[in-house]
Structure formats: C-alpha cells, structure tokens
Image 1 (cartoon, one colour):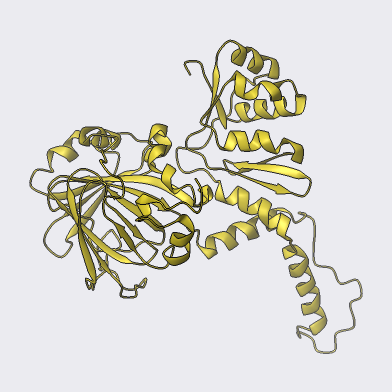
Image 2 (image 1 turned 180 degrees about the vertical axis):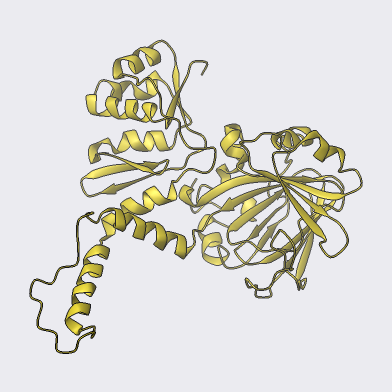
Length: 393
C-alpha cells in the first residue's frame, strides 16, 4: 500500500494523516467506507462458530432487575439458542481470522499498522435491541457494520477503572453521557481509540465486525521482562561480602550492605537495546489459547520436505500465530509462537517471505531448499508446528 495514497475507507485520508491526527487520539466515522459490503459469513455460520470449544465466544443478555446484563461464556449449546426468543442478546466471537484464515481479508486494509499490534477479528451478531451496554476498551478498534443497522453513541467523558456498573459480569460505564451518535449501515466504519466510551444498539438483526489492536499493559511487560532476567541469573549466585568489616552497631543495616545489594540488582537488570528487542519479539508473539503450534512427534528431515514439495505439496503458515522479524546485530530474527528463530542476516529474504505468506510451494522455496542452513531452518519450523504440510494446496 502506498503510504501517501488517499484511502477511501479512511474517508480519503492518507495512512500518515490518519495516524497523525486520529490514531489513539480521536474517533473517525466513515460513511460507506467499504461500498457494497457483504458479510463473509451468514448469521447461521456466525452462530455455528459459537459451538466450537476452541473459538472464544460469549453471549450477553440484557434483562431487567438489579443485574440488567448477564454474561455467558461459550461454547454455546442448542439450549442457549432455544432460550433467545424473548431476550435482547448479542453473540460475540473472537479470533475469527485465526480459525478461518480466509477472513484475514477483513484485516488486510489495516496493514499500515504493524501486525504485532493486531489482536484479532471479532464478530458480533444479535437481534433487534441487542447490545453489550455502554463500555470502553483499552485498545484501538475499527468497527465495520455488516448486515442490518446499528445506533452507535460515543462519549468523550474521561473514564476510569472505578466508573463501572456494580454487580455486573462485564465492564459497563455507570454514567454514560452521549456526545455523538450515528445510525450505521452495511459498509460504514467507526474507528475508536482507547478509552472512548461507546454504546451500540442493534436495529433489527445486525452484524458488526471489529478489527482490534492490542496494547500490552506496562505491568505485563515489566513482569515478563523481569521473569526473563530472573531466568538468566545463575541458580547458585549468592550475596557476598568478602571485605566485611567489624559491626559496631549490632542489628544495623549498613550503607556497605545496601551498596552490595544495589550492585546485585543493577547487574541483574543490566540490559541493552538488542536484548530488549529479542525479549519483546518473543513477548508479543506468545500464542493465544488454542493457537499454540503442535510439535511433530515424528520429526521430518530436509530430504522428506523436499520430496513432499517436489511432488506438489505446499506448506501452510500457521494462521493463528503472529509472525514478526527484525535484524539484531549480524543475525536476522523470526519471532513467532513465543520463540525466536535467528539466521545469519543474509537470509533476511527467506524470513520475510515466510512472514508475508499464507502458503509456500516448491517454486517459492526452490532457491532455499538447496542451501542446508535455509533448508534446515524450514524443516525446524515444520517440526515445531509453525509451518504445516498441506497436500491439497
């Protein structure tokens, strides 16, 4: 995508202008962002996803009384759907593109945003009046209207962790003040930055597709980084004071002792840009639930891989994983599945080929398979489930 090109789905803005003026700053509504939009899945197909135990889903019901909303986690049952008739309800399904790779076409327009920020494609389905209440999120989201209509309301009031409706299973804003609203139709899109209160109510049967971008919490980042540093400390390393001086005040914690502790902590936390890059690549590619690659019990050899591809087979790039890459020193790294896979930097083209592919066939890999380093790298990814063999492709 040419960065300077005006993009119709952003209302004629360029990617640069959108990122500079709207991204994480203010909402953007685009009428008819995707002309002639048709849902890639029918309502029945969306409902069918909720029956799968490996696809995250939930029902949200609106009802009266002190607890006006009720949350029920999936997988769904036939009884769940049988009880919907007299309720206002929403079915929300996450990680759709990870389980139906063809739906990655829904996230393709947003590739001007780094892929390690992408969380998932979510779809919500509900009948007239269905909603999930007024709430806010900690991530950026593009809301694309599918079938039907929906009334979206947003609020610019500051939100806080304390401004929740008490006694409800979902995080709802207790005092929601409407500042803007739209009636959206198929193909309309609303971008919302983090912490903008929003409230969407179905008008008739309605489907909404949400492209969400994750923003890891600082606490999560620090905890994971500290755990990595902890694992790097030798198990038998202990406090040492070879030049201990005679204590004049029994029980006193001296400056000398604290200086020694400071030295231990500083050395343990000592880091540099390259170490942080290696850690962050691993951290940001940790697989989601049900997306962990499966190790092959019977390991493949490079010869077996070459024969498979030569006979017309193809390799699928795991659709549920995030693939990112970076040069660090003299190595070029592939980060995927919470692991790092380094190669000498001259193999950058191979790694970027894998990152940007859905399937790889013999023609794609022919130049690499004759090289032992590249060939063994491809074989390793197959043995660790990052790539899989697909005979029918």
